[in-house]
Length: 275
View 1 (cartoon, one colour):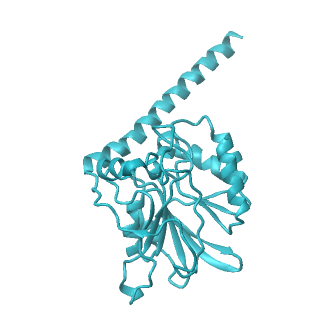
View 2: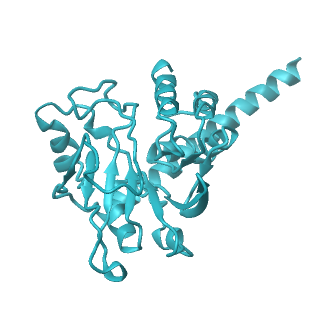
View 3: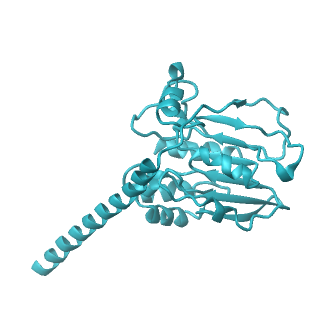
């Protein structure tokens, strides 16, 4: 929790107009939902979120409610217009693609062309389709930058083995296209996040915990950046069987939780009857 609160402190110290978080608020349970509400409530700026695969594995409805209690806006295949500093910005949230909940067509429907837009997507590979839909900047997470980045192990584990094209940092291009109406170009930033999964450690410069700050409307190259634009990895599109298995895992975990809740309710009922 000390790390979580420090992340909030550093964020508030930067005085952002908007805070965006791209999913995986919990890991494998609902034990810390009150703590999640406490942490997210600590941001001074408005907070907009999209959900990740771990949120769905642990219970997306419960995670959403915890975020709502904190005052955050959760965008599930939807977009909203925010007024920040007397300027309007569209923020689009694509639901988690890893577990099969992303609906890009629905998320893009009604998007205004006369207002700037950024998108949140837990999975970075969704950026290609969002660029084609007119979104020039996508912010993602999921990979934790690989967590162990010594000797480029993150590119081996998350890239070659897991099949991700986008592992950490800035991809695509922020250069203005010659013809906006026909361009599918855009930029993606995959953040390292501040948590961990599978292995409770982070090693290497690229695997460090990270809060990423963005200055919208500033010409690239106007100031030094920690990560420059880089080419994507080869990547690998998941098979239909893999996508089905991921979606089925969400249903299976939900059914297990329902059975646990039912058992607890029966035990409580028996205890009440005996009293």
